[in-house]
Length: 201
Image (tube, rainbow, N blue to C red; front, side):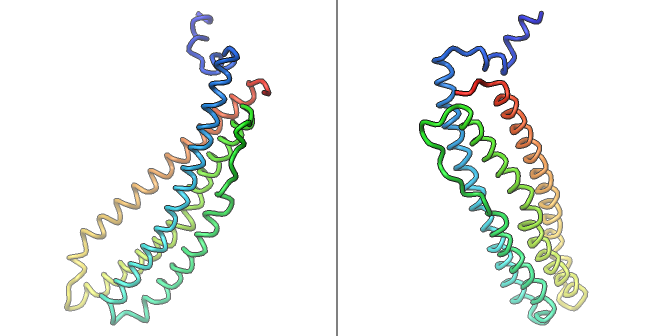
C-alpha cells in the first residue's frame, strides 16, 4: 500500500519530522559537515604522497641504472615538476571555512554538498595531477628495467613481480577511483533532493 511504503521513504520521514527531531537533524547535519570537511583535508594531505613516491623512484632509478642516467633524468624531472604543479591544482579551493554553529539546516546541507563536491573534484583531478606523474615515473623505471634486462645483468626477469604488482595497482586504482566518483555523485544528488524538499529554517 502507498501508506505503508511512505513509512520507508527517507524523504517522507525527513519532511514529517516534529520540531524537536528537526533540531536534532540539523545538529547532526552540522556535525556531518564538519566530518566531511575533516575528510577533505585528510584527502588533500594524501596528495603529498605523489611527489614523495616519484622522488623515491628517481633516487633508486639513478642509483640502480647509473648507465642510463641521461635517459632517465628528463622523464623523472618532468614527473617531479608535474606532480609539484599537481599539488597546487589538486588542493586549489579545498580548504574551506567553518560553518557557523548557528547555521540553519539549509546552510548545513549546502556545506555538506560543497564538501562532497570538493572530494569528487579531488578524485577527478587526481587522475591527471597525481596518477599521471606516477605513471610517467613507473614507465621510465620499467623501461630502464627492460633495457638493463636485455644485457648481462638480467634484472628484467627478476623485475617481473614488480611489473605484476604495478599492473594490479593500476587496475585497483582506477576501480576504486571510479567507484568513489559514483558514490560521491550519488550522495550529492541525495542532498539536492533533501534540500529541495526541506523548509527553509
